Image (cartoon, rainbow, N blue to C red):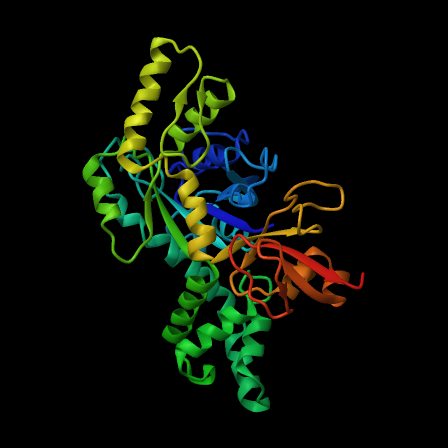
Length: 391
């Protein structure tokens, strides 16, 4: 399952965001290091379900009002303090927890109520813009530390014995959560042979690895209480993807929906009251509605979707066995939804379904058009595909 990490300084609202996105109960408190061990939970990306486009009477039973949710893993890691790569705070325990994350949602305290260490300092007393770059720096320096281990010895062997530099670096970075192609891409960008790198070059290379292996989106959290000028300054950052977020508002909506008080689908820009509310509930929900109207929602679902589809460039594919009824062999309509990298082919999908099917692939069928597709057909977002094989 695709994994996305939640990271940031302590007390920035990561666990609140995590609970809002997963409904997993976690410790939430107004002090640093509430989270010690990483929390793992299942969240979802939100996509339009193809059942409506296909005109399936009664829908597919897998979506809600034409909205389909596809599972991903969300990892809420312990708070990071400056110089964590040197062992401060929970240090490398935090960084190690991010190894499997393909992208990172950096949760910022947009209210400016916590300092760089996550200690409460009162609303508006800390500039959240100061926190924007530190997470990138800490992850880059963590990767630099891995690269630095035995670097001189590696380079002596490389110069003496020759070989391909990418293979040396791939071996050195094994287990750090950096893909081989990301290492090769960073090598191309360096435009210098590793044998001639200075220490600054090594740090630059680590920064490139960070950018390619852990792309980030910034969640400007606590916008429900943040000074408006703080939010505006964060949203005005030109080099970053920043979204206004209120994890607390999303939790309130999810709980109200669960209690049958409102109709709400995560990611919606509004909600509908369908149950009796007391005065406090009505006032609280109206406050949330005003926030949603201002920012287009609570921002939690938007962050997850942007991380998966914009940063990582995934698409959603629906494999079926009956291209006319859009079902599996048991008659379940649109039974599965797979997240796959853009550029994946029909044969890639066959292997994703099962290795035996991939190896015995004959052709595919586009269930929407009934056209026959070859193994090199590049899948498109929302495709409904039947795989034909000898198995």
